[in-house]
Structure formats: structure tokens, C-alpha cells
Amino acid sequence: MPPFLGILFGLGILWAIGDLVHRDKDQSEGERITIADALKRIDMSAIVFFIGILLAVATLEHAGVLAALARWLDTEIGRLDVIVLAFGLLSAIVDNVPMVAAAMGMYDLATHPPDSFLWEFMAYCAGTGGSILIIGSAAGVAAMGAEKIDFIWYMRRFGGLALAGYFAGALVYIAQANLLS
Image 1 (cartoon, rainbow, N blue to C red):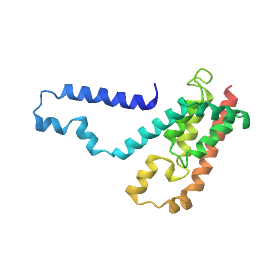
Image 2: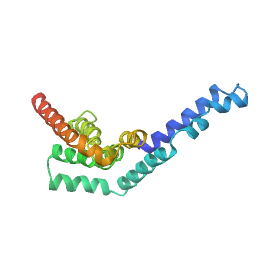
Image 3: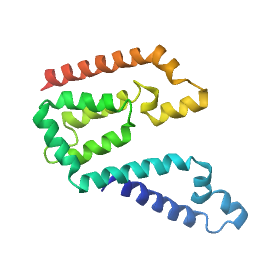
Image 4: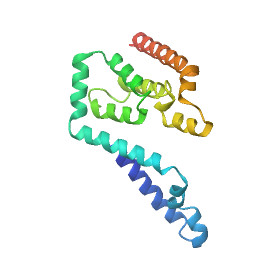
């Protein structure tokens, strides 16, 4: 199931269960604990962002763009570890959710099963790569707003350390995968 359909399906199920559980409560109390009320209190722009990104990625997948990109990367670069490292570095700029969603559209699960090197290394690289720049993850952007963290300040203090940690962890993971195979 595409990720955006999973989000919408899960929200629909949660809404229906919430309405069933609280159907006997009076209206003033019941309105406070509904999914609709909870949605009013959360950051809707973040939800719309993620749904929009996942819809865009699904469109690229259905148009065949992602499969063509995967073939091009395999031809031009040829090494899966280098491709995944590049994904991680790109997730420092682009949020890791769309990066992983794009990778899911690029690489077939029949060729690369869920527990293969590709997906395990992608989880590390996309998740950790988002911390190289504070703008690479939704949590980082939220921290910038909540703690008034300046992008340049973060880059000077933590950018180099995060990049060094990213590559150190990647090297350890690749060495471990080579030793265990």
C-alpha cells in the first residue's frame, strides 16, 4: 500500500473507533476528545506537507520517473552503498520522509527484500543524514522554531560533527555488513 493511503486509511480507522468509543458521552464532553478536535490542535501544515510529498512521490512512481532514475543511478554509479550514501547526504537538505518514499518507489522489493542491505543502510543514511543540516528533518525544523536555533549557528557548531558522525557510522555499517556476509 502506498504510504499516503496508509496515513489516510489509519486516520479514518482511528476516527471511526473514536466516534464509536465516545458515542454515549454528552456532546460538550464528546467534542473535546474527538479526532476532529485533536486535528485542530496539531500542526496541520506539517500533515499537509507530508501528505503532499507522499502524493508527489507516488505520482513520480506511477509515471515511471523513479524507476528510470534508479536504472540511471545503477548504470552511472553502479555501487548501491554509494547511491544510498548520496541519498543520506541529500536528506540533509530534503526531509528524509520523501527521500525514503522515493527510494521505495525506485527499488523493487522482489529484488531488494525488506531486510536487505539496501533498506537497512537506507534507514541509517536517510535518518542520520537529516541531522547533518538542521533543516533536513522535521524535528530539526521544529527545534529551530521552538528553541530559536539559527541555521548558521547550527552549521558552525554541529554541522561538521554531524557529517563526521554520519560517515563514521556508515563506514562501520558497511564494514559490519561485509564481515557478516
